[in-house]
Amino acid sequence: MTSPNPPKVGSPFKRDHSPPAAKGNEGVGRPSQLKQSVALRTRRESIWELANPQLRELTVYEPGKPIEETARELGVEPGAIVKLASNENPLGPSPKAIQAMHDALENAHLYPDGSGLYLRKAIATKLGVAPDNIILGNGSNEVIEFLGHAFLNPGDDVITSQHAFIVYKLLATSFGARAIEVPAPDFQQDLDRMLDAITPKTRLIFVPNPNNPTGTLISQRKIDSFMSRVPGNIIVVFDEAYFEFLNDPPDTLRYVRAGQNVAVLRTFSKIHGLAGLRIGYGVAPVDLIEVLHKTRQPFNVNSIAHAGALAALNDAAHQHETKRVVDEGRAYLQDKLTEMKIQFVPGVANFVMVNVGDGLAIFDQLLRRNIIVRPLKGYGLPEWVRISVGTIEENEKCVSALRDVIRTQ
Ligand SMILES: Cc1ncc(COP(=O)(O)O)c(C=O)c1O
Image (tube, rainbow, N blue to C red):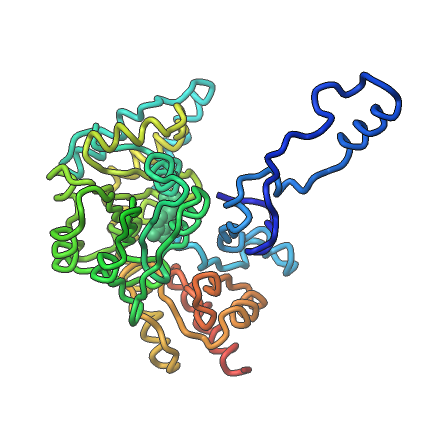
């Protein structure tokens, strides 16, 4: 889903399907023919004429700015940088997960269990489904990609919300499908508008809940009403990367248990603090999971990730402590923003979306004060940044830098 700087949208490239004139017998024939064929071989066509056309329009996913790179640019130690840009766990991984990963290194010469049976069993027990209802991914992003491989063809439609997690749009584009983004008044995803947007070509509807970057949540009542009306031939994907941060989370697994065309995505990148390992999962009816397995590489999740995730899943104390720190930190950030009269969207996950007037400018100025946040221009929100909740000290540093930046505006 990434590509090196493609030409701008609408560039007049056309793929020429006519056979190249001298192909097949280069090196034979008269000197003039030889010269011509050498010229043909050395003439470098733009690679974009050869690549799948939809890739020209695909923008590269921009991750949060890395700590090391920022420290190098600013000439400071990495420890001086506060990264609040990627909704990671401020406490780090569970100590039990770290121990399990150390232990697993001893067997790093062996291929991982391709089926991930132990981890799927443990997740299944926790969720009250069967192991066959679960597929593991190299991050839940990979499960999103499985869905594209399994269900999308050029010309198909994918429905999602304005300002929704951007990967759905990238996925649609990379498969030559159209992403229909329905308006989200007041940053609330509107499931009725999603239903209205359905076309005969609609294959997938993505509902991130809570959404990233807005941090807003759709209620159980709205989900149930939507599910009672959505046609059965469309796969509905509830992306629940931040599920474990919710106090009273909506239940979407009921639709999986009922055998509906629903996939629920979860991840070990957030509350479990294992973003660097790349491990997430999808939960869906068995036949849907079987389809997704066809699109999966045999060893898509590494053995260290299996071990870390299994231990993290069983470390309830670390999950509780993370939620406590995040709840406290989010309340602190929102209180301070209110005090500073800065507009924000009240969030329910481990980040807050904040209107700073000029997102890129404030991102830059905070960066110069060693704080990395996420500007949201790519989400069509140029005035906003997203601030992940950190430790108390990190949150305090961020607020003090923000105060400083706003004062000098
Ligand atoms: C809504 C949402 N879905 C999925 C992901 C991807 O998570 P993973 O690290 O499991 O690929 C993220 C990560 O930020 C997210 O915000």
